[in-house]
Image (tube, rainbow over all chains, first blue to last red; front, side, top):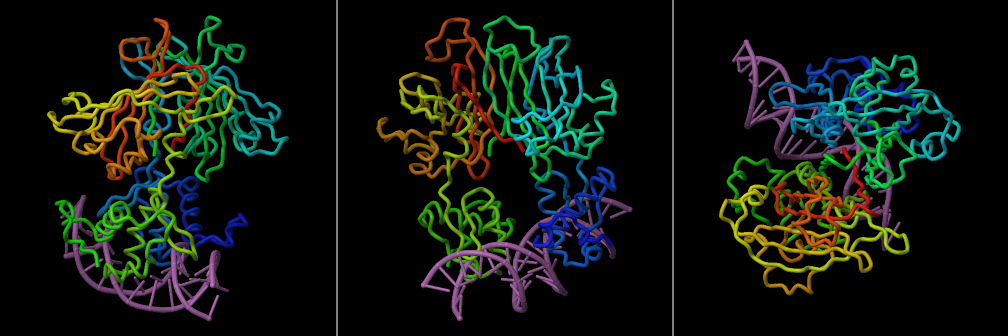
Length: 246
Length: 246
DNA sequence: TAGTGGTCTAGACCACGCT
DNA sequence: GCGTGGTCTAGACCACTAA
């Protein structure tokens, strides 16, 4: 039976039972690894395991379902839902290839290195002023055309495993990759689109004076803490951005 | 005591109790009008009124809180929260005025008229192919500069009251106005940003060849049904679009 | 101190998917 | 028919607000 008393967070002392159970189930999903598309134990089993009533388990699971980490199917069970990144954050950029089809741009990591703290970015990531960062430079392409030029910053302590991975092993989509390698799961993000004609900042071949789209993103993990700061530049042509507001 | 059997919808027959109560409370909020910032009856009072247990009332209220229609404050009560449009849909467009401050553009309705069905738009709004529409043309300005040119289509039957209102009486923000005049409450929207240099479609003064931003929006009411289709064109300069993705 | 919403329990019965 | 999650109940006790 899992212990709910071993939680290191101080807030846990006053946290409701169902919250502590939620966090525990969450970490069991990520670390001990129930497989995706497999059912987790039934509500009544979990109630026995944690020695609480079924209602409390339901309340714990409720938010995990809301966040898209679990999927309930009446009559069958509750299933791990390895989050469908394709249908969430990554669908907002829609580019057409030469055939007119919408595609996810491929990506090519140009560089990845540890860098010293950068005041503005450390602040965006809620880090101490002297915490080092990991900086990634990356191009995104459709067919052979570069459509986006991205700079990405991560907390060095959280994402240290990335420093030991060869660049060509990086996957096309970073968020599932963060999850696999660093157990950091991007659940939400704030984005800001604007326009600039300052080309000094990026690698995109462009005529001086051309407008570029500038997209700033702060991505958050399950706990709502910022874990990635990203700036992307792109040409407006063939660009399409879709979003649901609620 | 409110009757939950008078519901006209057929789906109501199989709908859970808490859903029927939710809808009933919702319509009491909108139509019979508990005032905003006033508390609604306590959970135990509502439980007696509807002759159900407190848990069922809590479940009914839960979603109204999620949707931002009610606000619970422990120890005080549950309050009507006339939705804060300023902080939701309308904050995504951020324009700077001459002083560099972010402002909500003012608006000027150019025309409002009933028009025959338009296949693509009727489809977007989930309307029968022959349902007439209301079309609104509107300019949005910062200081004296036009920044957005908008075309808006609504279902004529739902928004018929608008046809009898003089244009100068329209408010700067349409969504609260829809709510006041037609009891239609915009809760969410899908937006799509792209770029065009086709100027035939709009009133913006622009040099041929200049890129314009094109924003298409389908806005939904509480029930998730589409009620407004909107296309806006604007200049990229000073444009900023902010969004939370989750 | 009285009244509100917040947490938690224990259990009944229903709707659904499987075999 | 059995096991799953879905709905609903009745009631205990806690945390917070206000007079």
